[in-house]
Image (tube, rainbow, N blue to C red; front, side):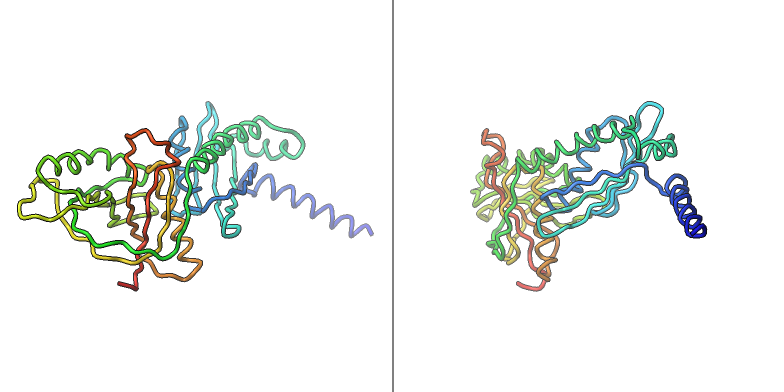
Length: 298
């Protein structure tokens, strides 16, 4: 009996030692959200830009983000682990640590609500609020197989971040619609973007912002304006409603759908826009068709 008691005491002391001196985190926050991994990843990064004295130290994977938040004399470390619970639910684990007061936090947290714990909860409420607003003001519906019509088009090339996509479109808009119309070109459909390169790890894009046109023999010339032809394509289709800044939420939904159903796609989406953001229509009523072309079909 004495040996058993000593063994249990050894296990308890060993566990305490491991928790205080070896375990790398002080406090764990867990959430379950009805959103895909890509949406969570992008919302974390957007939220980080709204914070003072905060930086991402690692974000090379959609499911893992490391973040440092500076508060006066201490630095808090948040390590985000984002995983798919099922087809519609994503689990978020935020492992947090106060780099200057980690050991004392570990001792106190099981028995008291520490200042570190309170600050962590209050800070993450900002993320939860932003995510809730994002989900409230946007909607994605994966339709299934769809087809993009062929068209001749004028375009401007752009390199930017995912979040900067809509800003790049707004900047280049005057070179397309007004310039083309004022020079006698007949427009022939809804504007669209064609992603030519997408680096998910770095959130960087290269894309063409395009206007379908009727080809003629005297198209206007401009050093930044080019012309191309889009052939008819089949691919996965989604309908996105919401601000076009966050239409990439539909990209991740299509990637998830393709992965679950073993469908080969290019990973280079095409977005067709149905609304002019300057007309005053409520954002949730903005519509875009998002296509992810098949990589093994014409």
